[in-house]
Structures are given as structure tokens and as C-alpha cells.
Length: 436
Image 1 (cartoon, rainbow, N blue to C red):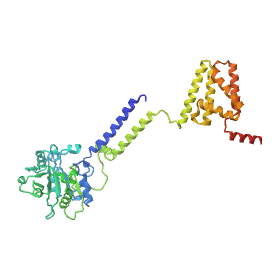
Image 2: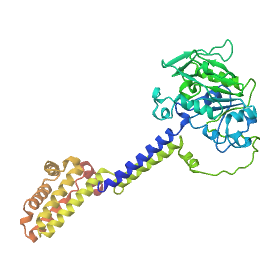
Image 3: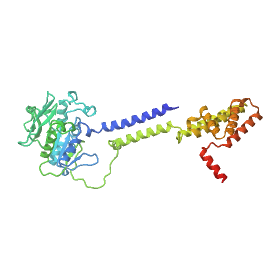
């Protein structure tokens, strides 16, 4: 195909764009990654515990929720620390610990353990662990300091902590991360732990705040290990108290709470580029990618084909044969050799008659000879006249004078019209009808 280079390049570019949309949309969907919390949301809902997620367009009121769950990440505490020197009314809403104390709202803060590379590369090893000093720095920003941490040296570690007396739950953690019991302040009490250290803490300074040292007890990766999923449900049930019907608030954005219950009325929001990205988030990315691939295939297919398809293969053959005959006739006329053109015409005419009677494979010398044999059985004289005139035109047409050529051609035409080459039974039947 001529000029196919730009078209192939365009098709490749569209295919790369589709792949980019798939990869970027799924890669940015942190909730579905090993470190995300989509699994926790679905698991709690399956156990009859309603869950609502943080939304930049909706401000939650403390009276609307029973428990606030905050997966702490490196850098998330900076917003709270930046407001430390402001007035209490301004600083309070920015700090989840102060909000918990202000509204007496049970709040579970889950400490970080893995770097973000785990969600993109899918590999969790010692090199992907967050530095313990960074975790201590994040806790210091929200009002907790002087905590020591311990990590397992043996890879996986199993334990059976008890959230309720007499009900141990078997858990398993990879590179388990706990609080060092020897470093706990005097006002902090261990609620659950392992032989390595404490997992869940509560301090008297912030009685509504609970600290969970290892996020693998609540994230997508860890819920699939041992009975970690049962531990997560038991922990949430314990912290939100018995008989609660209000939903659990899974706050992954660190948004401040409203002091009052929002009024159900129309709101105006400022739109940004992040809102536009939602049109390309999964699963809409599958639709966009499919449309791009279909458009690329249609464009390439339309550019590759020139004109509509011919209806039948036989039509192509007939058109090719007609074009070849017309081209040869024109060349013969230009050369002044009408005799050779007449001989070719007679030969092709006999070949077509033979194919009509004996099939497509009979358009050769054997088929023409069979045609004359068939005619000789019906009318020997007519067959002899037709054969002699045809042979003369084919063999010596280019040597005949114009008058001789015209005379032999007229003889051939009249002989050919005497018999239209129909089957014998059909011709005899038509003759008997005409006689009657």
C-alpha cells in the first residue's frame, strides 16, 4: 500500500494512547492496589457494617459517623503541623486527634509501613519499608512523641491477639511492625499485641484515639492472610461500640469534619483538572480504550482498501477478460492487422461456447474440438462448414485480403447462427412444436 508509513504510525500512536489510558487509570487507582483499603470497605459492608468514604465535595459531620478510620501516610501530618501556631478554632479541624477530642469521636489512626512503590511495582520487601524515624516524625506532628518501634526479623510472624477476653484471633503479618513496649509512655495502654510488641494502643491524653501500628491488618494485601479479615471486623466493631448503626467513615484524604450536620441543599463547587480525570478512571478507561482501538482499526481498514468490494470473483474474471480483449483489439487495430484481430475474436468466441456447454475448464483446444465433435453428430455438413471457416480465420486471417476476410467471417457467422448449441433434446422439442 502506497503511503502506508504515516497510516501505520498513526495506528501505532492510537494503540499506545489506549495502552497509556489503561495503565495510568489503573496505576492511579490506589484503592485497588495492595496498599489500598477497598477490600476493607467491601468486607465491612458484607458483615453488615455501613461504610462511607471521604469525598472532596462532601463534608462529613461527626454526628453522622460512628468511627473514623485514617490510614496515615508520610507527609499527611504536615497540614496539621502547619496550623499549630494558629488559633484553636482554626487549628482544631486540621488535626484528626484534636477533632477526635473535640467531638468525642472514636478515631483509628493506622500507621504507615510500606512505601508507595509497593502499589506500583507490586513487590514488598525490606527495601520498600518506611524508615522508622519517618513514622515517629509523622506521629510527632499529630501530637504523639517518644514512641519506639520494633520490626520482625524473620519475615512472616503469626500471633493470636485478643480484642475480647477469651476470643483470640489468629493473624499473620509480613515484616510485622509493632510498638516497643519498653518505650510506651505511662499514659498509653496496650489493647492488642504480639510477642514482638504492641499492635493497638490507647492513650489517656487522647481517649478517643486508637493507634494501630501495622497497616497490613486493614489493607487489601493483609486482609487475605490468616484471619486478619476477622481481626479487622472485630476491631471496628469494638471501637464503634455495640448497637451503633451509623456508618464507619474511611477517611483517606484527611479532610476536616463539619461542626454541624450539613444541610441538604444545593452546593456550588469549583471544578479542577482532577475532576476531569474521573472520566478516564477505571472502568471508564476500558470504554475509552476500546473506542480508540476500534477507531484505529476502522481508519486503517478504510485507508487500506480502495473503493467498494466487488460482488463476486467471477465478475472480476469477466471484467479482466473483457479489458484484456479490448486492449488487444486496440493494439491490432492500431497496427493495421484486422485479420489477426478477427482470428483472435473467432478463437475466443468458440472458447466461450465450449465453456457454456462443458463448464469453465473447457475453454481450450480440447474443449473446442469436443464442441465440433458434438456438432458433427447432429449436423455433419454444418459442422464441417463452421470448422473450415473458423480454422481459416484463425490460421490464415492475417494473410487474407480484406474481401476474403469479410467473406470467411460472414460464412462463419451464418454457420454459427444455424445452431445455437442447445442440448439435442431441447432443440428437437422446439422444432416439433414449430412444425405443429
